[in-house]
Length: 280
Image (cartoon, rainbow, N blue to C red; front, side, top):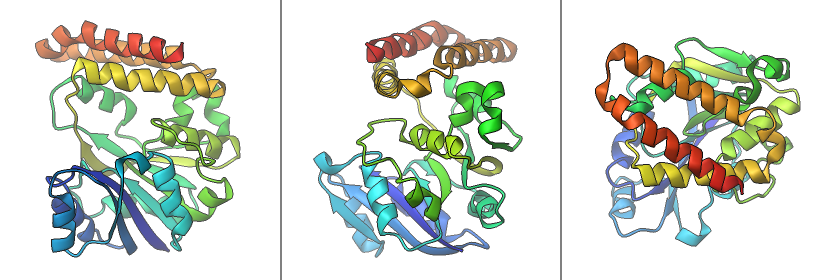
């Protein structure tokens, strides 16, 4: 099966060369095209793309949409499988891509997402542990009662989807989603009887060190998403968030991670308040 990789870029001068090199090193996968969508900025991203003869299109900042930019590229693609990645993932293994797309090739699943780890010893270390465990799992509609909202957990920072299924379900329905477009589509997949596989053997690093204001802003957008898509919120947003907070605290205490313990209360408060404000 042919694989197209779609990667939005913004101020990506420090990422694009190493990212592209790591994709070219992937083994046992028929990569048809690596397509970059660059949002205009003042850095040297476009210059680097040109110098390295990489395949890209340039769009204005007002044109970019987390959902519509991806959807537009998928609808133009002739590939069998679409892989979505973000510019700041780090790929160290040459079987990363094979392990991500193979479940779709062999009919085991219709969409897949990778295991994401962080290189930082911060709260994200524990959120990654909770959301991306070391064992793979296939999720279907039958898992909703057991998993609740986590049934629809999916990340297009590193994911793959059967192109025919994406097009059949009409992607993101032409909606401009500023966040959680991956969960929006995962919900459609699950509720229409398709399977999602979390591939613990497809490993990448995706590291952040968000400031409290950045966390608040992200969760405010997330709250707005759940307000506008309340049918997804009904599957237990608060329960899922509370479970994650307990896991982080338990792990930080076990590790005697003082930095995380100091940060824990303001961090959780920024998330909680942001979510509440977004849902108003």
